[in-house]
Length: 265
Image (cartoon, rainbow, N blue to C red; front, side, top):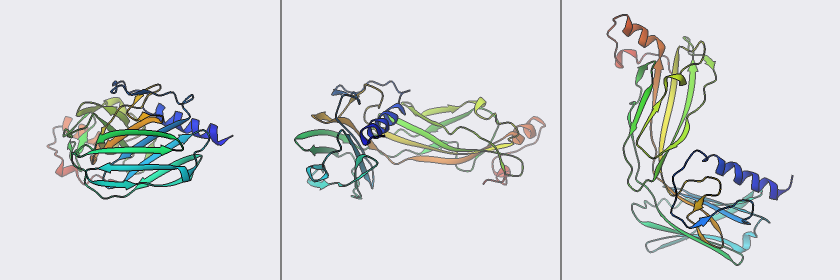
């Protein structure tokens, strides 16, 4: 398999991760990953900044630069090549606040430029850290992040038996929303022989357009692509316990503090 094929497959898979999103971005460029010889993705957050350039053929590193500009600052990202793509990275440690950041990529005679603001952070209001909830749908609520266009919600989820051992496979949550609420349906907690579920839920605020096939990006010029600002994530670790609901149905007065002795792996 050629490096060209690997690069196109990587870019295709990366974009298809966002295929369920439908928000229309501000019109700049319509991206076709097969026909466009260079596709650029960039993520800006605190304290790190990362970018990837897919190209066919692979671009010459000596003729390719990515520069980050904000206020009176001007910083060039470091680069390397791996797996048929060119990677860029930086650890500026700068707190951007509401500063507009400009990213400029130059590759051979081609250029691309885009601007973004990094969102503020968010925090998960409910479920709270170390909550133990009865088996039911779970409503998740988080604070609104300034300058965020949408939120990425993902989890590390485990289904466990009464002794705390693995009871079966449960799909991790991985989705995108524009609102600040998300409900985990009751059907999510349906692994046979599972007594309780341990969930680590995280929410990340994003600024920038959605990445979907033939989407409109926010990098303009010869090189097309997507530029993102990512705020600090919020999250919590909580349990959903089938025994808690049975105890409540039997009239027991159980609250979260009294059930924190549930074995959490």
